[in-house]
Amino acid sequence: MDRAQLADFLRTRREALQPEDVGLPRGARRRTRGLRREEVAALSGMSADYYTRIEQQRGPQPSEPMLAAIARGLHLSLEERDHLFRLAGHNTPRRELVGDHVNPGVMRILDRLADTPAQIVNSLGETLRQTRLNVALFGEETQYTGLDRSIYHRWFTDPYARRVYPEADHPRHSRVFASQLRAVYSRQGANSPAGEIVDALLAKSEEFRAVWAAHEIGMVHTSQKRITHPDLGLLEVHCQVLHDDTQSQVLLVFTATPGSESHAKLRLLSVTGDRSPVH
Image (tube, rainbow, N blue to C red; front, side, top):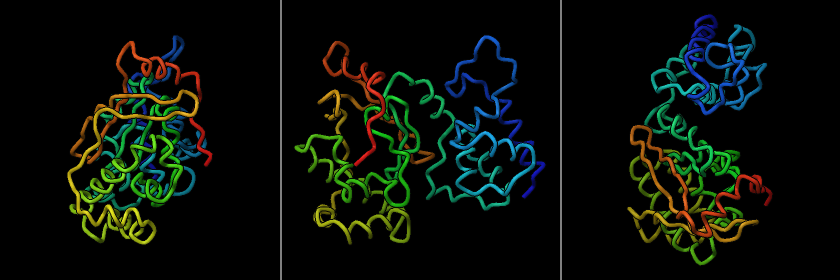
């Protein structure tokens, strides 16, 4: 671990970012060049003290998850992220299997969608980032750990994961999720994160065993979705998909037809609060 170079690299990347680059207001009295340390810490999901100690060459060696969080918070490119890992004394993540790092350009788009439900999802169905209104619509999906990070795993093992969609739509979602997982499994192979999810679901879910046995692949969700919300009821929304093939990730943006009842309900999300994560 090269503490001096690590601290200097983080400082220069922080000072190179402007508040507007990450969706933060500048404020009339702002004098700091670039972002403040506490802002980077908040964007990275860690305490300001922890991040400050790294920049000041103090504290323990950052773990790989912490470094990945800092890389996302600072909107680092893949090359910059790999450099960050090496400076901290870690091997660089395998790019073909690890899909947690978000392209800075896609991150900037998400940051500008503060008034819209939107999320970034990787090829394993793991939600990496959400706007506040997306959390209000779907719940906090970045909180999960282990196999439950994947919606593919949660869908077939946790009944709560299905509360977002009307029951009549569940069979179609099950087929699409299994089809999408099969596509990733086909690319990554049995000894991969996708293979681990498949093995777990084959052992746990009779429904998954049935849809998996059908060998469907290439199915996609329709652009129109029906979503149930505990306070707003049924919403009919359009899901626009922006693919980032270099990262095997997608940006999902949810909108409704202007003037429709669902459009009015989406506008109410800002006052309903976050959807409860309690099962």
